[in-house]
Length: 385
Image (cartoon, rainbow, N blue to C red; front, side):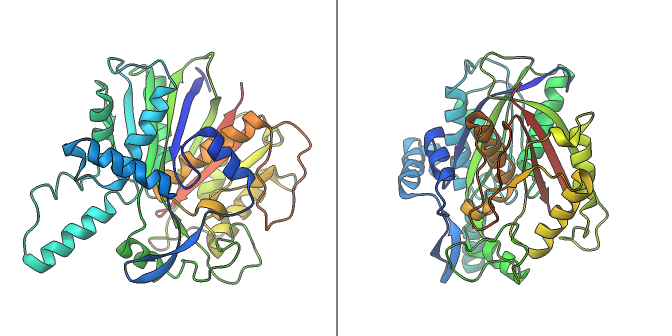
């Protein structure tokens, strides 16, 4: 991709922790961060924030009267954005853009406000402004006191990677030189989980590895929800502090049979991966971080697409949803973070219940996939140089 797009900072706020060292240590551990919690009145498998991070969220909420009524998805994004900007030389007077999206948005607030409405026929004054989708980027911009453009969107589970695509487009157009991109999700609410259960895709059994991503022997769906936020700072050109470079991007949408369908061969993934590769030979890709939500059809279709693009000589395959569940709109950037960490440490994160994969060469190019309801796929090719 010319000119080069550098990732100069990455930060996340998730069950993996908040610091790079904590995130990497948790990835090296074979234990998933999924547990059973009561959501509403129902015991549910989820990957929730550790207590130390929930305490940090409450500290932020109580630090400013304006933050008291914000949804957790907004607060997660603010904390991740603060951490990312702290690693850069960006200032509030820099005209950097912000694009942070969410699949579900202010889920808990919306559910609570609607519950009050059903009881009383009224809602609080702040019900509307605190549940709008633009809430996340606008509050991050407020917190950082920025002067650049701010954008929010929802493109289901590929939201964060679409934010990255948009940041790349702004940078390449010359309309911006720096962009903060990412996704945030706080979906561990009764109504959200009820929707997943209604589609028969949610895991129901608490075992050592409840979310069986890319396990093709499973006989039932095993998706688990997680929560968190992840953001990246993008800059145009070669940068001394670059963590990695975006070498290619791809995107595609396929014709749907129904609202949550994806074809058996995942044509959208085939197209997005080929587009991201561009002139790069498939054998140059060292690792693919798959989307693989832990559902039977979703995992198989992505595998079929990878075979169609890469043939019998597939790159090493890995994912993180077996460990932290599916964080919906934030998942793509959490996968980007995982990819960058693997390149920096030159070490594949194995999925412990799958066949061990031998790493025969340095990890220098990683392809990251995401796809959401509506058959919209995004693939991002990362490299160290």
